[in-house]
Amino acid sequence: RQGYEDPDWQYPAGSYGGDYTYQSHQWQPVAWQGDRDLRQRELYGKSTKYQDHHYYRGYHPNLATSPPGQERTQSYGSHKENYIPAARREQAGGGTLSSDLREAGGQPQETSDPPSLLLKYQELGLSSSTYELSQYIHDGADHHDPTPSGTWSPSPPGRSLVSTPAPVVPLKFSLPHVAMCFGAGGQLVLVCPHCPAEGQQAHVELHSLEVILHDTKELEELQAFPGPLVREDLHKVDVMTFCQQKIATSCDLSTQRGRDSALLWKLLVVLCQQNGSMVGSDTAELLMQDCKCREKYKRKNPTANLMGLTDEEWMSHQPGTLDLITGEVPPVVETQAQIVEKFTKLLNYGRKKDALVWAMRNHLWGHALFLSSKMDPQTYSWVLTGFTSTLATNDPLQTLFQLMSGKIPQAALCCGDATWGDWRPHLAVMLSNKAGDMELNHQAISTMGDTLAGKGAVEAAHFCYLMADIPFGYFGAKAEHMVLLGSSHCQTFTQFATTEAIQRTEILEYCQQLRQPESFLLPFQVYKLLYASRLADHGLPAQALQYCEQIATALLGQGLARHPVLAQQVMKLAERLKLSDPLLLEMPEKDQNLEPDWLEQLRACCQEWEVR
Image 1 (tube, rainbow, N blue to C red):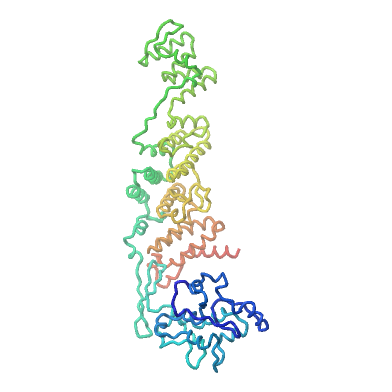
Image 2 (tube, rainbow, N blue to C red):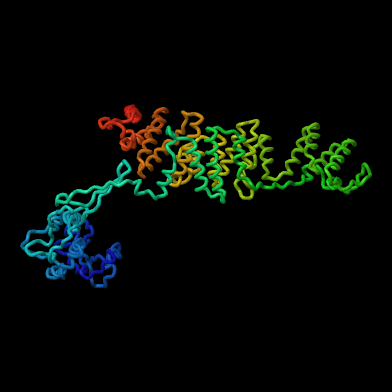
């Protein structure tokens, strides 16, 4: 191999005439005995060298850099030496195969010893690779022999050139070591490196993972959660307290994402307070709590073309311009009473259009809309368009008027940008003014959620999906809107299935069960199993078993036909954790081998499903 420039590896090449010589460990073509002369003439002539084959150039440093007239060939002895430990080669002295080959003049040395195994393979027409494979199998124990023998010689006296020592089974570990495994009851089992066969006493240590991991962030996060949320001693105040602690500790209110995350936790608190039911006004009040600095939406004057006037006609209605009908120059109007008086005076002269223009220009939109509604529909639409043109594009009134007009509001398509403003006032005005087509309202809110999700605001998008009653889906389907509350399922599974996201979704399921006790989120059950596994891994097997019972109860009520694999995995984990049930400590010793009823039912259903 490249990097091994040991001079002991460089041997003179033997002649290719007469008999076979083991010149290299590379594979050689196999020829029958009758074709030996033909092969010698065509392939192994005297002028043939390894250097003449272009595919050998650069393969080995000795072959690639040999000067003209000198042939460097790696013999089998160097290949054999590669498998000898370094300590053995140092003790071997300067003995090499080169002296034997020089004495033989490039021909195999004729001795009275029986022919070697290599010559037998060559006479049978087998390649040298077969021979090397047999040597590697027989001499594999040399790698694990820690005590080298005396001086090693490639050609011991009285034996053939190739030696085949007796096979020795290598040890898997050279030194005694500690064996470790994890127990199902949240324990770490250590077997100390003692040898009972030599009189040492066997020693096994049991450690609690809960004690070992007591100061880790993961265990603290698991212990702080009051799950599973189906316990008889659980009160919803505990759940509300946990949500408020999450707002105080894990939400950075200085960022938009932190405020959105806090909004989700606040929604869960309100749902717990009201037993899982909310109306639009409650949600709107929650949305507007954080909007302390409410934006000032600038109003604009209606443009001339929206009112159907040319620029000359518009300028003729400006204050200080001579009125051709009355012959008077109207003063600059400043008070509201003077504006109304002017509007009434124009109507006295029967100039309805001029009165509408005056009311629109001075923002008397109530007068203008009422007057136009009593005229033709085209005029009413004209006045209404002029009114909406005075509103800012991101004004929530624009969202309300567009929704009431039967359109998807522009805010649902453009929210989430810094230039657009906060998305919460737009959602609040849509939730608190639901009227008309309810399907249109849900579509508008769902569209707003899609827009926010596309811009990375996952928590805000999921808030919209909850308001639009979008169901939960599965991780494998990327078209789903929600899988875990507050976590994007477009991420990798490790980043997606966080402990916080699972806990938040379980609280939402608990809030729904406060309103409907028999309800549960079926796609969420697999993440409860994942959460139970994490509890068991962190030394909390009793809570993990309670989660298994909760999942089994839901699946038995739903039927295993939809999730048979999930039922089998729950059964396997429950069988490992069943001895961690605290009720077993209160039972007599003879009854401690009994299994809970739900586990027996789950096993029977799984066996029945497998038979079907």
